[in-house]
Image (cartoon, rainbow, N blue to C red; front, side):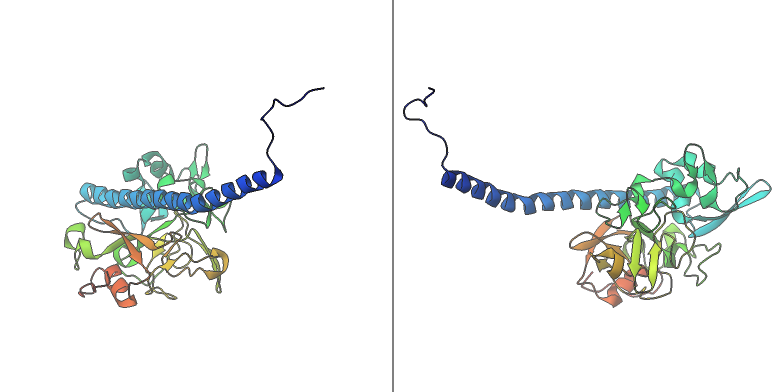
Length: 297
């Protein structure tokens, strides 16, 4: 018969329960710290991607006599016209996506819209995933898709300032152009918003909408913020969770815990908290209001 060596014994039930309890406490203490580290990393990546968008605007201006990219433009390619290439599409060559831009503006398939041009190995332009447009904290995005357009349109976590790139036009479809150049933004580049965070999908009281990187509709589906409808002058929504019920598609929105990452025209990126007033926020968005930013900026 096998006997345990003298002086050795197994764990008692009470000892085992104590060990389990200690492990549970340690996990409870570590989990929030891990979540904070992950969120900090996601916020840093989001800020870096907005910085890339900023640099792409400056690259576009450098190559086009200091002009800013238009919110929407029609591109003439020989005898045909490709319609409604939006600002994020126009910036593709400056985001290491020149092949996709060329495919989208070639009009090879006879489809008039930029978003429907065929891309080898992908399908229409609207199905192309662009990593730099995807914030890792965006809960309304599903593997790059807008959660309300899975399989139909790739989403974006960022939106261009319509009042800047669209010349403050009130038409949601068309060839809007900026009214200023990079060097002569009336309120100054450091006081003017270029890009904001905006949920890739938004389901609120007025229905389901999306922030789709290649869609030309400024009001509901395109990658724009600041178009004159709804609550467009209000500051960003901070964590509108669940997004499929509490999100306002007319506003900027972020899934970061404390601030919306916001790219300014001077190339800087800053976090805008819930403490910013509506007046200060809208003064920062408008490029030509002539008002100084408040102390809450």
